[in-house]
Image (cartoon, rainbow, N blue to C red; front, side, top):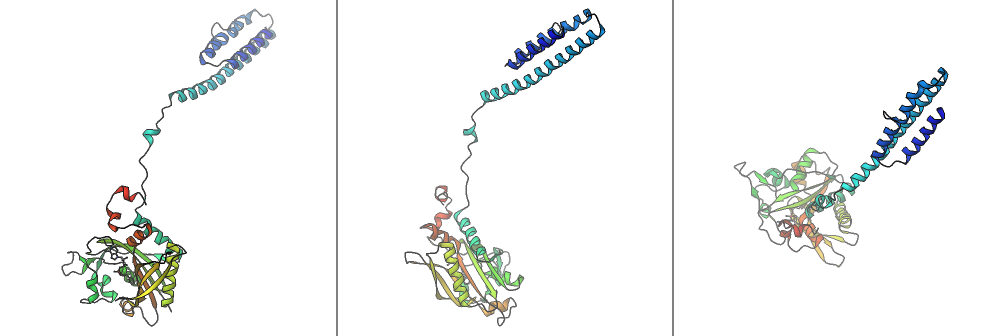
Length: 333
Ligand code: FA5
């Protein structure tokens, strides 16, 4: 009987290994282990064996064979179930690519791009970044910058005043230079900082003017700073930002808060010049206004328009286009 049991077991294992469908496994299960199955029938005939030893040995063989078949069935079922799942998932797959396709991703506005790139370039030159408030006091925007009330240079900045303070002492800053004052009031020299930000003037929009635009200010205060440091910094910046084939020059100019003052221009590789901003040596009165001794400290400052720079860099004819919110224009940059 044992040989028969072992033969039935081998036959069952071969059939299970070959089965490729769950229904077939169900049929094999019933055939070998079911109520009227092969092994059940053998079990029923154990009683016919004569000796106890024979019964025990055959019973043991029958149990082992039953277990081997049962675990082979379980294993095969798992394999087939997972293969069937893979097939089903493949068949049920729906292509959602179109539904998933998102609108094209946007990107930073070209002025923001220029702003961030300017910060990167100046950080590379060893500067730190500072920012100040857009609503300023007359003191920071004018007075501490050597423009006392009635100073004629004030009229050069068409200022928008708030009605927060009735006497016109609170305004929308007309340039980023008040941040110089705030920096010098809070940090002791040596100072190597740039200060980007939004500024406001009562300018009528045209191809080169906006009433709201952006500037970046630079301020260095240290011992023995000279005009040569200013010129060198402007030149290093010009090459880093525009490329090694650009150069810069300073032309005499006037700002109340710098002495001497200059306008700085950059030269394109084709030899033409573009005016970029103003600069100069920090006026002794400005140093005094923030409690610094001009005999001990000296410095330079510069400031230029970020929008005009972005306009120049991308060859845009009219600065107003950058703010027209026409996505077809904006997405080109
Ligand atoms: C100033 O605002 C000075 N604070 C710059 C400065 C800083 C000089 C430190 C010395 C030392 P100005 O008014 O020239 O200077 O403006 C600087 C730049 O801002 C201009 O060169 C121009 O690029 C830009 N700008 C001025 N007005 C407008 C405007 N309405 N729209 C867009 N850009 C403008």
